[in-house]
Length: 165
Image (cartoon, rainbow, N blue to C red; front, side, top):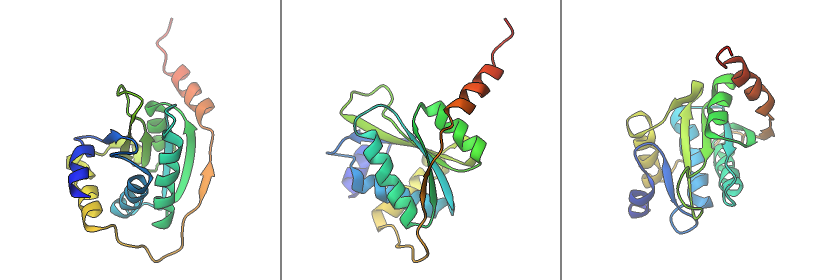
């Protein structure tokens, strides 16, 4: 796996061609490693409109659940929605998107609670080390998955931050 990690772990995210470089197995391992690194008992996820995004988000949730964390699925949305959800819920988050890259790409942007970004210097290097070594198996109870629609609250938040007209 290390040579494949060279291609997909970037400075501020994990990104590659699906399924050749980034697949459900890697997303599952990242979910587990992320939860274990942060000691999180709950995380939030969201995904963009790419065909592969829901499946990668579900695999990440499986990994997070296997590491003992509950996953709140915010569903289809923007990266900004995920950051809002992380701040509102006070939990780390994972966004499944490859931003401006072509459709065959996808990726994972991670943040700590309060939407603090995770990059090489703030956790991504440690996640890589866990992936390379093999993420330890968690022996406690598995987490659960729930769905929470945060779009209305996010829209209200945005409207409240519009400059006076």
